[in-house]
Structures are given as structure tokens and as C-alpha cells.
Length: 77
Image 1 (tube, one colour):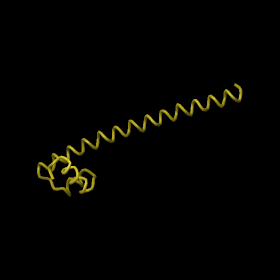
Image 2 (tube, rainbow, N blue to C red):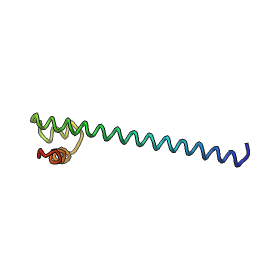
Image 3 (cartoon, rainbow, N blue to C red):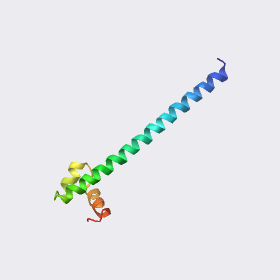
Image 4 (spheres, rainbow, N blue to C red):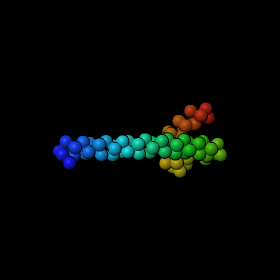
């Protein structure tokens, strides 16, 4: 392999690796968004069942202000 061909092969491999890493990140971001929406729905259901804002925040791993923000966005706060 010539030096030019070797450099081209390295660039092609680097581009493939970068594309794969970018896709993995995009997939992870989608998974986080889906998990957050699931958590939001669970928090709203817990609040409707009478669980306190503080306890919902503790169990859900979010700030109490997030719980109240989600309630307000849902028209419940």
C-alpha cells in the first residue's frame, strides 16, 4: 500500500468510527428522552395518587422544582 492509499484508508476508517459514535450518541439521546417522558408520566401519576412533591422528586431522582414544572406544564399545578 502506498503512503497515499494508507492515509486514505486511515481517513475512511476514522470517518466510519466517527459516524458510528455519532449514531450511538443520537440513539442514547433518544433513549434518554423516552426515559424522561416515562418518568414524567410516572411522577404525574404519583402526584395524582397523593404522593408529595418531595417524595416524587426523591424517588424519581429529580429536583422538586422539576416535579412542579412538570405539573404546571400538564396544567395540574
